[in-house]
Image 1 (cartoon, rainbow over the protein chains, first blue to last red):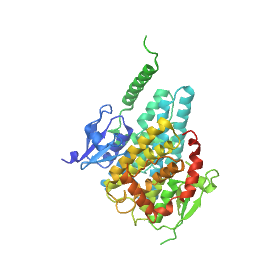
Image 2: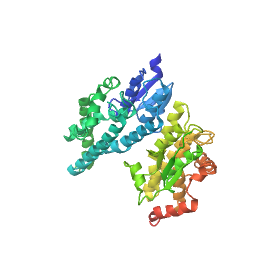
Image 3: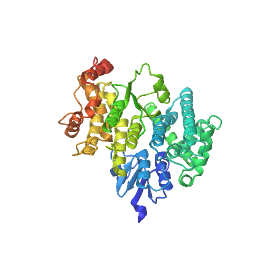
Amino acid sequence: MAGSEVKVLGTWASPFALRVHIALGIKSVKYEWVEENLEAKSQLLLESNPINKQVPVLIHHHKPICESLAILQYIDEAWPSAPSILPSDPYHRAVARFWAAYIDHKWFTWLKGVASAEGAEAKKAALDQVREGLVVVEEAFGKCSKGKDFFSGDRIGYLDIVLGCFLGWLYVAEKRNDVKLLDEEKMPGLAAWAIKFCLEGAVKDVMPDKDELLDYANMVFQAMAKAKAKLNAPPNN
Amino acid sequence: MAEEEVKLFGTWASPFSRRIEVALKLKGVQYEYIEENLTNKSPALLNYNPVHKQIPVLVHNGKPVAESFVIMEYVDETWKHNPILPTDPYEKAMARFWAKYIDEKLWPAAKKVVVTKGEEQKGVINEIQQQMKNLEGELKEKTFFGGESIGFVDIAANIIIWLVVAQEALGMDQILDEEKLPILHGWLQRLLDDAVFKECVPPKERHLDFSKVKFGSSIASK
């Protein structure tokens, strides 16, 4: 059966696993999704990714591929028929990879920083940094899209997937901190892009519901706060 | 073929710009090298890499490319002979995985081990030993990570040389010990013997002096 040739190990809330969902959808590849429990990782996950023990993992012909950006490029290369995920020109590919590195290493780190910032001042600084990063990416969007709907032009591609997977968690940060981050005024290009991205065929059926994600995030952060309070509490008499 | 203009902005002591030198030399690409002073960055560098203001930057016919792995893939895709990455998509994915592992796990640990002491340092040493064992698991009996010749992961792993030199400069016991890590140790000797690669490491004495100055304050309280 063709479907069992391709397996994805992931979690519904993981933006990195969402990248793989979307990419396989773009290529119309049938696959089996294995929902992992990160508190009790499956034997398959531990064997497929022994080094990092993380999702997502793509398993193709029984061979595991790890790290979402490596997986995206693998999908583009293993299923080379159109539509393509990365541009064909080496310079445009370099531009796409550069911004993917910026989004993952800088911007997403700042987004995570919002959750770990303690105190009103630190939170504000963290949120400002996320917003500033989006302004930088807004400029990149202008240059890459050249007036079209997506970073990749008329259809979604690498950079759309790399940033778009975080839209749910961006919404979570906005709601939990009662702020606007993806601001239509400051980032009109990205604001319009975000709406179109979520409506894309390969995205809308696999993107987690953002309010479900918010409920999940609230639950996780509440549990973390409880665990922290317990650690900091004075010993019982 | 149209005249090509290739410029590389780098610094002599950066493993990241040295990576690009290896890639360009393996392909026989002629380039102009510009040594940057990171305390006084040139307007050209700031213009070509306004986002990070860092080296290395490759400028090809006026178009800048930044981030060492991005540049390496660009070089490989533009000058297709003597490939640095495998052609098979799975092997390519593995190379990208291990290069990322080196930069995101091994390099931060290497930077940490030379500025920590006591129990904390011991913990980082154990971490690095495990990371190196993982790399050995990938290398196995191959001459290089790239197979018979140097490839993407070998070039990425050049940072191991910076760790070895820093440890020597500080009089630390080498983590990359021939007994404990024979496979990786053998690989490093082959890498340093390679005709192209050995042109792309900082001169040893100068590198040792540089490391002593950079990390020297951690010796005092050892």
